[in-house]
Each structure stands twice: as structure tokens, then as C-alpha cells.
Amino acid sequence: MFTAYDTLLLQEPSKHVLQVTLNRPEAANAFNTMMARELFDLFETLALDAQDIRVVVLTGAGDRAFCAGGDLKERNGMSDAEWQAQHLIYERMVRAIIACPLPVIGAINGAAYGGGCELAAALDFVYVSKTARFAQTEVRIGIIPGAGGTQTLSRAVGERRAKELIFSGQVFGAQEALDWGLANAIYPPQDLMPTALSLAENIAENAPVAVRQAKQAIHKGLQMGLSDGLAFEIEAYNRTIPTQDRREGVLAFNEKRAPKFKGQ
Image 1 (cartoon, rainbow, N blue to C red):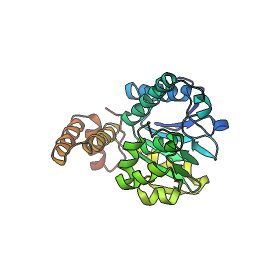
Image 2 (cartoon, rainbow, N blue to C red; image 1 turned 90 degrees about the vertical axis):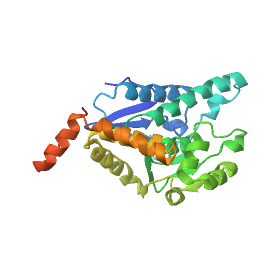
Image 3 (tube, one colour; image 1 turned 30 degrees about the vertical axis):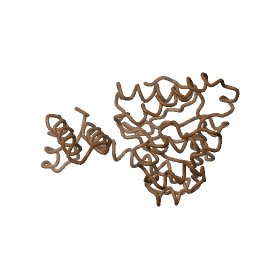
Image 4 (cartoon, rainbow, N blue to C red; image 1 turned 90 degrees about the horizontal axis):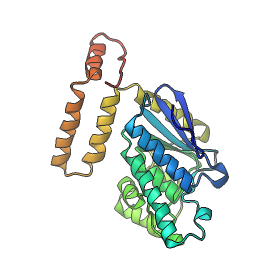
């Protein structure tokens, strides 16, 4: 169905749900150039042709780390030009994930440091293990968050909290992530994936066009003033009216049965 990747493990645990696992456990699932390229390719593919996938769940291999950020062993000794060229791939990767029209749920199973924290903040929402830890550690090695963190973390936890976390590089836990708005819920490690996948299945049962339009209305509307955001919402709403799914949903309601949505 999808390309086989070297650093990503793709599974379809249930109908319409794609589980994507960052699969470099020997390196705490840190990004290297190949992983960034593969994530970019996957999410660009999903944007162009999701086939029958309606929801994505992103997690990390093992129980130690979700993603430890950029692989500094790979970056050791890079020239300025080489570093910038590699980082451009990271930038394109995170833009592709944010722009994905499908809901992308995070199941944060361990440490999410540097780019891993940025990745968590870029997702639509995240569930976290009790063992999860987060940090934006970039200033400790002489750079700043460059995979969206100054923007996505600020939108998740607020400007003042984001400044505190980014300026200090301090580590914070699952409870703080929940309290500050980065996480939606905390679960024991053994319950994390079953819960995330269960919700993904629930979302996948809903009308796909409507879910996508709702995501666009929220995501783009929040970048506008209220009046423009409301106008964009109506545009998104109107795109659902001529769909077969809208007619099926109303018919199923009146016939007192579960709807059978086709994404049309």
C-alpha cells in the first residue's frame, strides 16, 4: 500500500487507521536525515492520496523514547552549509505533518526532547504515557527550536510558558504537559496505544470529508481574525453539503441505523 521505509514502521491495526512508529530505538528514535526524508515522503503521500486511511497515530518504538530530537552524532562535524541543508529537510518534514489533511494523533510513549517535543506540539493532539518527559533543549547546544517549536509550542502552552521552557531548556513531565495544554490525557504505559487507537477508530467511523474540513477550519481559522475565521468556517461547512456522506448521515439518522460513510 505505502512505500516500505527504513526508519518508519507502518501498520494498519484497524480499518482506515495508520499507525506510524518512529523506528530507531537504538538511537532513542532520534531524527536523522533518512527519517526526516521518510516522514516528509509519507505525509506528502497521505496529502496527495490517502487511499483508505482516515486517521494517523504516531508513536515511537520501545518504551524509553518517543523521539530524542535531531541525531547529534550524525550532525557532529557538519559544516555550516551541510547543517543548513540538512535542516531544510527537517523544516519540510514538519510542514508536511502540520499540513496533513488527516487527523494526526500522537501517542507519546517516552522522552520527547528537542525536535521530539516539537513533533509532539505539531500534531493535532497527543496522549502521553505517565513516563513521558519533554524538553526544548536546543539553546543548550547553541541553536533554537527550528522544527516549528517556537510557533507550535507557543500555540499549545501559551507565549509565556513557551518562553520559559525554550529559554531554560528545562525538562517537564507528563502532568505538566497536561496542565499546560501540550497533552490531552495521561495513561499508564500499557494503556497508551490501545486508548489512542480506540479513539482513532472512533474518528475513522465519522464522515471523512467532514473531519477533514473541521480540521482545516480550526487550523486555518486560528491564524485569522474572528470575522475571517467565521467566514472560512462557512466555506468549509458548505463543502460538506453536496457530499454523499452528508446525505447518508441524515438518512441513517432518520432510519435509526449506523451510517456507512465513503468519504465522498
